[in-house]
Length: 185
Image 1 (cartoon, rainbow, N blue to C red):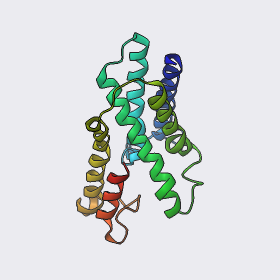
Image 2 (cartoon, one colour):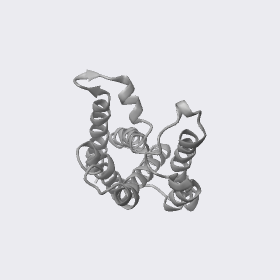
Image 3 (cartoon, rainbow, N blue to C red):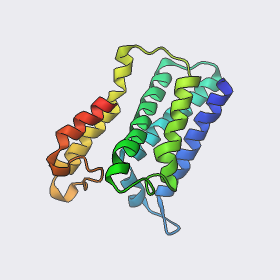
C-alpha cells in the first residue's frame, strides 16, 4: 500500500508542477505575468499546496516515517482540492454554462483528476488519526482564500480589483456564497 501511495503522491506532484510550468508559457515564451496571474485562482493555489504536501508525503513514506505535520499538510491539501472539485461540479458547472471548459485540457487534471488522486491516497492509503479539532483545520485554506477573494473583488482599490470570476458576489450575495463555501467545506 505504501508503494501505491508513494507513486500517487509523486504523480500528484509531477503532474501539478508540469501544469503550473505551462501556466508560465505563452506563445513558446516564458511569461511571468501570465503564470503569476494563475495564482489568483483557488484551483491553482489548492493544487500547488497539495502537490507540495504530496511531495513531502512521498519523501516521508520513502524514509519510513511520516511526521504528523506532513500528514496534516496532506490533509489540508486534500480538503482544498476536494473543495475545488466540488465547487466545479456543484456550482461553477451549472452557473457558467456547463462542464466542457471546466473539465478539458489542464482543467481536467486541476479540477477532477488531481483532487480524486489526493482523496484516494489520503483516505485509503495514508495513516493518521483524525479528531474533530483536526477535521476543522481543513477550513483554514477556504476561510483564508475567501477573505482574500472578498478583499480583491469588493474592497481593493478599483485598479487592483479582480473580476468576480467565480461569481460569488453576484447580486451582492457575497455573505451567502461565503457561508455556503465554509459550510460545504
